[in-house]
Image 1 (cartoon, helix red, strand yellow):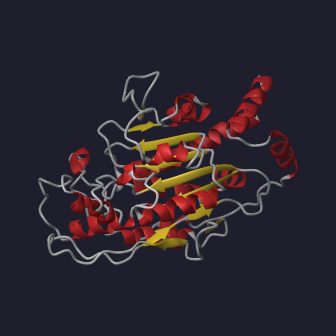
Image 2 (cartoon, rainbow, N blue to C red; image 1 turned 135 degrees about the vertical axis):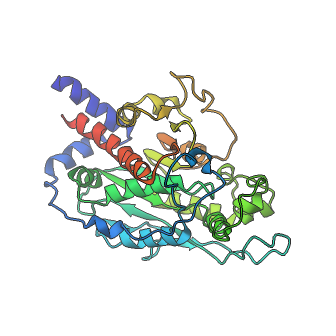
Image 3 (cartoon, helix red, strand yellow; image 1 turned 135 degrees about the horizontal axis):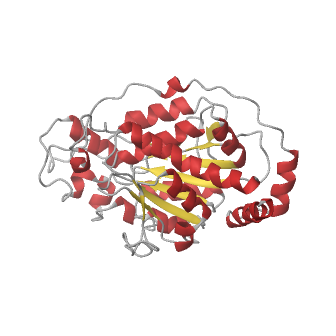
Length: 362
């Protein structure tokens, strides 16, 4: 059995693209991680209870609908997590974890309900143990592609809070991997969506049919309707250009895993454009952690065409040579769950990686 696990460990390391000799040597001389204590109530700041009525259908039966995730919450969470010594700016960010600013948009009299949008910060940071040297697995985490899919941010927060916390499994992951976090990749869209909700307008029956209401106005002005179709539009959208350049610089142009976290689906699911990513050890570990979440594509029949679809999606860009050469790119669509369940699912995305790596060491 130990021989089988040793082969499995080698296969995981090879799949992650890490040099075998370097990993073995570094693992042998790496000291045991020192105990750490994180006051996790540090992350429990108050949330304003505003609700997303564009995608509320999956939540209508809940007694307590999931609160929206506002730009202020993105900034606050980034600042709180950034106080920890194993959280740091990426290579392209400043000490406030800011990669750049969006252009902002003036008030448009043609759409009186839509607010003026001041320039927004674009955030990015990394989580890893800076004292653990040698090759590490790289995982890229993004959320906010679609302006009102707040559930993705709750999943991301659950994953980040776990990775930044005191759990020994999180300590292990910080010593073995580096996590590049981009918590809101559509900040102007998120600002406008949240502001519209804050107006307490009645649900709009045409919501979602007019890109100005729910998308990035930069995209709308150019006639593009979906932020998750614009990741290959070099030179057309300044925010996308800032992010693609930053993520490539931060990761050195390659990563082993990526997660793009979206909004609720009636059937909670995750997918990948690459069949290997749907059948690998990490995928199987995640199925065990999240048995009620559907894996898209073969060998099942749910959304079988996940390897196709419109170009310009983040997962397709991440997997491409022009992007990050990601070995295992994923998209996550949680179900219509409570906030606590969304946070749990984020933890499970991290724990599945822990399961794979520790099984490989047995």
